[in-house]
Image (tube, rainbow, N blue to C red; front, side):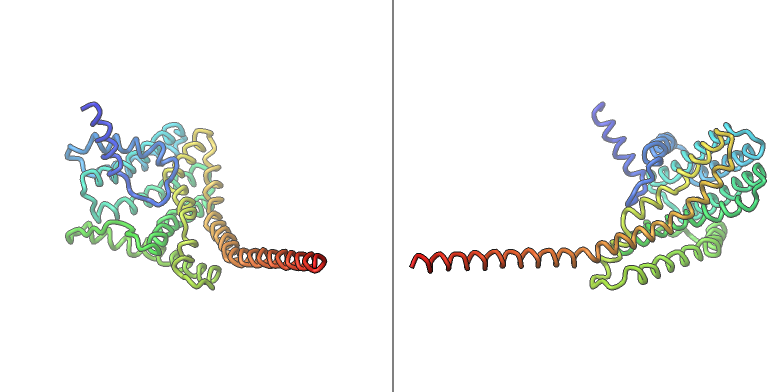
Length: 311
């Protein structure tokens, strides 16, 4: 039994994880294991994942109040607890195999509401209303970019993005669908359109379009997006609060807005190198063949001269 227990826990832990092409490092190293401990302890209780979603949303609101009231240590601690519970709700759903459409919508939409409250508190605290508003917009777009880059990564490889779930019709499901349709779906469409348009403009000219798309939406881009996720954001915000400088986080998140642009430039550079590489390789091979032919022809002339003198 002692040998089977770690194996069983490892199997449950793997089942609790959401498969992603690239990890968010802080999440994978710290918060997912902690979230699993919470989810495992609640697996046989009546607590549902949606209850955890509501709880960490409430704690996020308390953290926002703490920021506004200059209770920085409390706010920093609460943000990390929020992250643990944010991981635990999905892990609990996967452990029980009860992922729901409402749960997915609620997680996304309440995260946005929670972020709005936090940036509102930062604006109140720092009096930098414009920076806080811009930071909230940038963070929202970064999270959407992360989501859609993974979607494009999987779509060009014919991989399933998320397991299909459809809840029975009801009031709350209808409200959640409507909120997503009007607030988040336009972001998804615009980001995917921009990404595809940039691919057509910067990476066109390949005979194998699928291979080109797989190089454009590669694991490195997904890794960049994943490590701009909420886990990392809340750690940065917590560190800024512990330093007593919440304004630093506003500058941090605004700076991160350059990451998608930098990723496009990086992909274009790597694409250009890859596109030229076969030409350089062909040229180098042709030069080697040419030098080999010259050496062979020189050797033939030398051997013929020797034979003539011998004769």
